[in-house]
Image 1 (cartoon, rainbow, N blue to C red):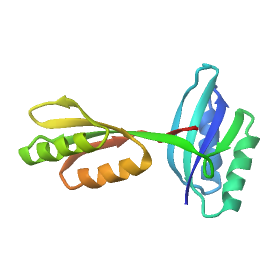
Image 2 (image 1 turned 180 degrees about the horizontal axis):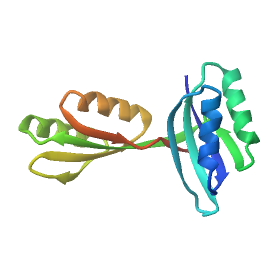
Image 3 (image 1 turned 90 degrees about the horizontal axis):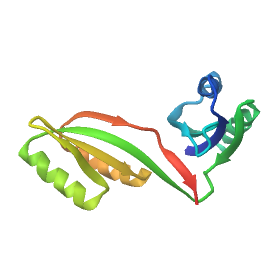
Length: 157
């Protein structure tokens, strides 16, 4: 099961490497990782999505994170109410049948065309996890030239 964990960390050199090393040393795969400064430039917020098979494994991950000297707080959103978003940039070949699919997506989902050339449409998709799954299911029906995803970010309600 995938779990979303947030760690507030000191914004210092090497913190990201230490957190990533903690996961890799224990054989845990990070599905998604997003890091950015908070309203306080001396701190960063890390949102980590990890696949933990059971509660014991999840607790071990949180305990190990909390032990790192640069980690201020660790929040597990698994059983909490939160809002999440993920950003995707997707380049779609510019052909007439794709234009119809894109128009449908724009009407149904938070999808924007941010660039249009003679060769492609560049889509910006910013949505929650469930919407991302639904959008990608539709987008995969047409030919994708290129797709990049940012890690998931989350905030408690």
